[in-house]
Length: 204
Ligand SMILES: O=C(O)CCC(=O)C(=O)O
Ligand SMILES: [Fe+2]
Image 1 (cartoon, rainbow, N blue to C red):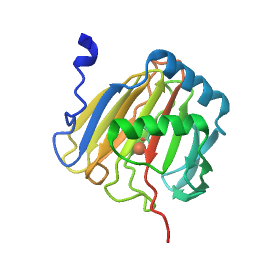
Image 2: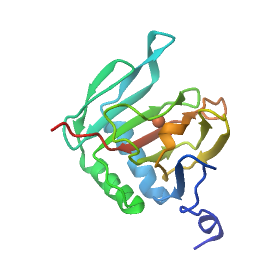
Image 3: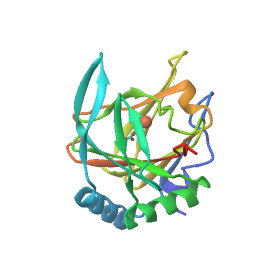
Image 4: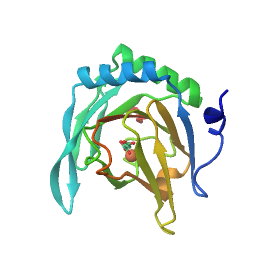
């Protein structure tokens, strides 16, 4: 193990309280991370997202794609989407993420940020379709970006950089007590793809 990787402790909680966030650093080597980045960039059915802002529907520059075990329906910002079924590449990545985290996931939301000027505002991943206190694993590909957490009541902040091929895991009460965001930046001119693996509650 080299000095760089040995400095990342994936068992360390990067939140001071009210939730658990672990940063694993890169779990893919550069060659594999470059390969998946290009594959996903070229072959995902990318669509602009629609979000609710000050009571209005806004079409984002950022694009999304959504996959799952089944054609799950998922509603956020008053917008209902239907999941596509996993591609072979996404299944490979999902298995890798599950092995690292010892968690299981049944869906994935992918985000494509074309440049640093695209980001995602403060939110928590607490939609009613998601398993309560379920783990969310976030794999980053492409340009390195800052990611931030802010406590909903105390406003404490924690920030970190998400590297090419890296994995972040949010679990426990994280979504209940913390917001997170991907701040926009003028310092980055290249694209980033993020995959967030989640658990959707199956309706019986
Ligand atoms: O791009 C990221 O790192 C975060 C994405 C995110 O928070 C989400 O999709 O809910
Ligand atoms: Fe999120």
